[in-house]
Length: 347
Image (cartoon, rainbow, N blue to C red):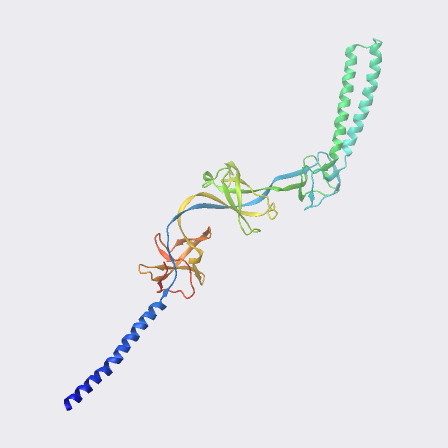
């Protein structure tokens, strides 16, 4: 009797001891499973591969007009009236200014007087020739004098048309060097016109890169007034370097745009070759405290934060100059709560 009761107590004690142990084991398994779920994140991984990208050289330049014209007077005289100001738009044939043609009028009056004298002598000698009072040779000399006098008058009168200076092309007055009352002389610039319909970029390239730049090649032009670069075409490469700077002048044609004006500063990017580069999606890069980084996956898909040195943006991707190698796997995007030690559960 006593032995039977003792066996029942022993069995009960073992049950009491084993039950908490089983409960603890069950709880421990659930905790590990929950911890494993908490340390995983559903993010896709990408494998980096070096790609060929264009190598560039950048130079500064300025926007110029293909039709930049210096307007000067052909006559010497005081400017009677300048009807335009800087910034005015003019059409071809519009009057710009007028020069008082005092000297030309004197030449015209003198030529007219000479022609009258020559005409009188010609008429007299013509009558004498009919009477055979003069020889044919003498009459020919008088006739030649009349012809020369008539030609000189035509030349002098032709100069009068240059008293009023008109715009040779459509354009904008960008510079005004003389004013009403100033003395104009032949060849001296009075106004400068520019036609903004045909614009180009002028820049200088180092002799180190000039061999890679050819006429007809494309280049990228960046202006502060535009939020996107413009495509330009190399129009001319001047085959002689500046003797002081040893740089070559390159001219590029630009598309016509209202926002682009002569005199603007421009940065020109030329393609001079190609190189290998690692390009990352913008979504894979996180910026913290001014530093850039990605999440690198090891062989077990565990993520580790890795700092990189970013380069320029190319086709909506960013170049990694340092910090990563060809063949590395990284998280394709940055998700909220992502941190080192997490397991990448995506494909």
